[in-house]
Structure formats: structure tokens, C-alpha cells
Length: 102
Image (cartoon, rainbow, N blue to C red):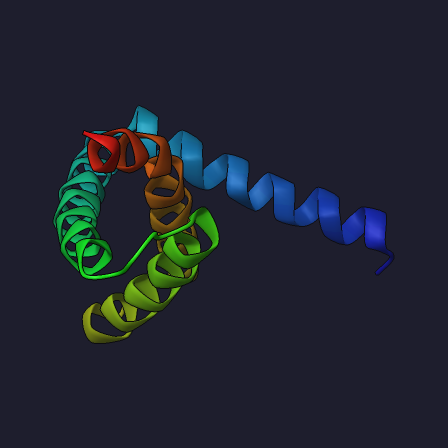
């Protein structure tokens, strides 16, 4: 399978997963659960960053990946859900950066 076909296949899987999360009642429930998990992890990350001197986005991203990896291992989370959780938490850097400047 060439790179293009692999990308097309993986893109299709990701698209199907996202569609499932947004279109079905069970998917919406799973998405809400994931957002709750993201909020809990974000609060933990904020506390960890407060202990650091001058945290950077790179430090935050590394903490996000490590925290989600540990959390996913404990909860036996699917890879796509884990990746989506990482993306969601990484998007929140700007919010955290503004809070830390106050």
C-alpha cells in the first residue's frame, strides 16, 4: 500500500470516527465524556505548570502527551480517542497562557 493509499485510508477512518462522535447519540455521549476527561486533565496540567518557572508551549505539549499517555493506559483508551484528547488539550495552551499572565 502506497503512502497516498495509507493516508486516504487513515483519513477515512478518522473521518468516520469523527462523524460517529458527532452524529450518533452514543457518539455524543462519548464526546461529552471525553470533554469531561479533557477538563480534568487540563486542571491537573495547570497545577503542574504553576510549579514550573516560565513554562513554554513546548513544556506544556510534552506534559500533555505524557499525561494523556498515562491516563489512556489506565483507562484502556482507544488510540483515536487518545489522539483527539491530546489535540483538544494542546488547543488550550492559549487559555492557559492568558491565565498565567494575570
